Length: 242
Image 1: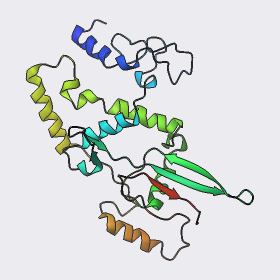
Image 2 (image 1 turned 90 degrees about the vertical axis):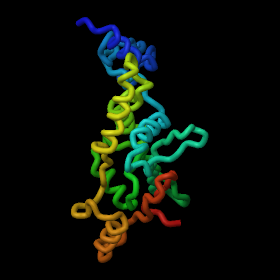
Image 3 (image 1 turned 180 degrees about the vertical axis):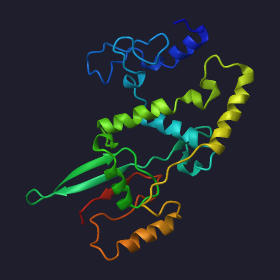
Image 4 (image 1 turned 135 degrees about the vertical axis):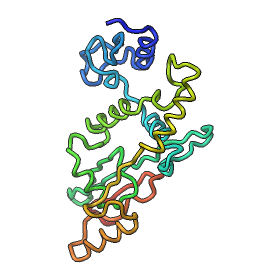
């Protein structure tokens, strides 16, 4: 299949950062990423370039921050000090600490979720994670966390938002792309809401009050606290009281 040289150049340019990096999925059988002439795969192992070169957490947060900036969801971003106006996504990191009774001194089993929905009570955040298939839960160091980062790389390529990162774009097309980005941010961009059945669309405080009143007559849960301020890394103690 013959491709326009400009298209071929763009395809190769998007994959240069992964060149020579061994495949994370093939686990040693791939000597290193070798770009396919026009497909976003490795010529050696046929896996995608996302399987060879994961972005860093900061890169992920910059991509999401760029997407949400200048939209009604900009409150989910924070300005980077000295970053010339750059904003990044205020990621929630949820840490679950479970005590293990072993002898006199207790030990702890800690699970860290790389991401959790913002603005939820701890009880609802935990319930949300439990509903995700275990192999897809974004627990640090697991296949689930790897899957989430691969999805971000595939779904949020930088050249979909920033004309300066596009190759072979004409000067008169830059303004058209900028207008298109503004349009989809105002008309199409959305952030999903996590809520119990019947509580979707309620103001956050009202939803929390409903959840609290519904559980008033039942046994107190072993978790307490809330996700709270999304600008901070919050630790949740599960079933342990000092």
